[in-house]
Length: 355
Ligand SMILES: [Zn+2]
Image (cartoon, rainbow, N blue to C red; front, top):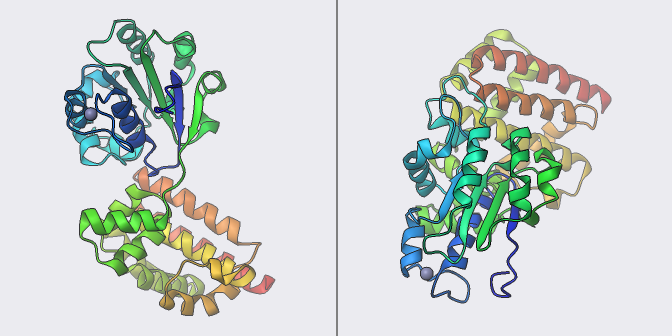
């Protein structure tokens, strides 16, 4: 797009969490403003690039979700720079956690912020070819976002607006229709493996295990790198045995151990469990070649898959998805997992009967 010179003034970069949609939006803005563009990337050395690298270019503007008492991104400029530079693949959840979000409030892009966008884009640029406004989590532009429609349709000359979203279904249709959509594909396992080995000195086997679990989400891969994930399989196989056995004392002990491991670990563990449930289903009904499991997991699935059927898979996955949300919202983990265990136990027994 940059090379043909036909750059749409309003674009929407859509990609799933951890795909790098935000990172790519910043890189794209840097590239179109680089004064010494290279074949496949910015030069990294011209005055414009130097400022972009630190996010201090006067013509680069961000709008990101905020929670009260904050109303505008400009109140959080330094925090935002620090968070993005530390991890350009960060999730909305990670970002909101940097604001003492103990109550787990949902983020928002406020009316005040929208007015601020309009006023700053009405001023001429300082030095850039493209004065750039990046709006991250365009999903949060609710009705307040409608005051931006005219601007999105016809931004001032030399202005580039990049909206970034994970899910177009949650973006206002009036906004969708005014932006050119650019789909950002999920990262491949080998991309993630390569990055973990190159940038984080991760050993090949571990990099491959993490890439498989992360399923294209580089941010998740980074958090898996931090937590000790080698214990997931043990934790999971014990859990399933206890769920099926249904003994409350066993479950209680297991739940105590899990809930002492921290919310980040718990979230990733639920992700692992979801993946194993899907794997069991594929093992039974699908093409085992599609399975992304290691040998130990494959052995486990031989027996376990007989408990998973088309009748219970959806229900189990749904309960796990809900558990992720509850974990993020500070639910009591002991109660949550005890209930979940009993529920999954019933589902597994039902699955066995159905089979
Ligand atoms: Zn440059």
